[in-house]
Image (cartoon, rainbow, N blue to C red; front, side, top):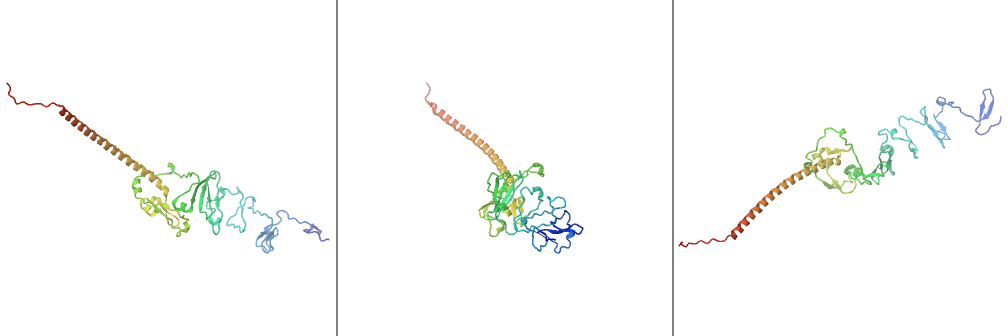
Length: 315
């Protein structure tokens, strides 16, 4: 027999006759049971290394790991780690919002060490808003609507504490306020008295002592949470580090009621002023009439002829 050609093997016909040919492995011809005696428990695919620890694939090779039913749908239970140092690309529309459970992704799973130099876009499906977190050096967050129109831009310090925003387009914030959601509804009272106790202040952030808060270096306007807690404790809360926070939006109903109460006082005082003005006018009219009568009487007296009295004895 000759030596055969490259990539050929000797094949038997089952009757002792050997021939050279190209070997093929039929479907289902090799199972895991047949590979139990492989020394390293591994398989080399596509010209991988000589001593792989598990499965080594090299070259333009694609591997699908199936679940026994459909290779297009893969389910992995437990932890799965992608150890390659290259980029991982998830094709467009390949992940839907229904595929991500709550808390499925957190910051430690997006960036490992320092914050990424690239920004993170959290896009959305039609009708929902999206948010963009920019690089740490830029230090801001932008919120977009479904038309990719920037609704609001704010620095981290603004968001944490002062609620200052720099709108790039007219903002349209809404919060749940339907009467059907609420109970124990009562009208606010004494708002003007409460507001008169507040102490508005100007201040600067202690940036050097609280670098992790992302405070800016601008002059601030606001209140001190500890002082507000003594007057309006319902508007004061705490963050994860036990620092006090302030619900500035909660001042809006109080300010509205205070303006109404102040207007009621103004209206009441105006009625009193009008009544006093009316009384004063009556007094002035009476004085004018009295002075007029005296003037008329004087004129009458001046116009009368003098009466001559005679002491002569009648004849």
